[in-house]
Image (cartoon, rainbow, N blue to C red; front, top):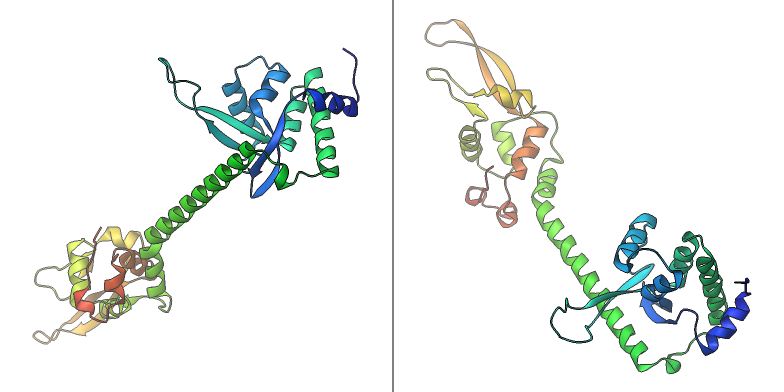
Length: 283
């Protein structure tokens, strides 16, 4: 088969299109497209359409609603064995040209030249809305609705992500102004809790414990190792015996304060001035 010039291909296409083109709404723009299934048939690809299309999209990182749109076509009949709607792809001419080129055969070269000439013809004489068929207008409306639904889904997903991250964000806000380590009383103030609530929490979750017959509390070694708590040592004189003794004081680090604040997950309670009414979700 001899090579033919693009204008010859398009002249033929005016009577019987080499590969039919239409108009579709892609990425917020109304543009010229072609059917992936028609292109597959013309290229004489030695692989079934579905496998070929999915492989090419993955291989060349084509993006839906940018390089192509997916169209669910209703089945032609409802007979036995019907598997439901057939998936079609409307390709931008840029994507169609690239798919044609990578086939590396005469059919691919011919298709690519054809699409280039289609683009030139479209630029010289752009389609006007009045010239669109009823089916083109329906497809345009359907594509716009799909993009709207997809956008709403992304917004809802982001809203859920923000809600999920709210406890951690609030925790960082609570400790933004703190420095170094804090005693339990000061840590409770930073967390907008009563000191006895924080003490009970640290005891209940085994961050620290009380030694019988000894004053104060001792941090569990595990919490010391991960950097949530520290010990501060004080020298004092026993009032009964006059002996010099050492007392450990548990201090909460910024890392520990961040962890504690992320365990308090009720935003309304966090913002409430009544700290003793806070609701806690303890890990």
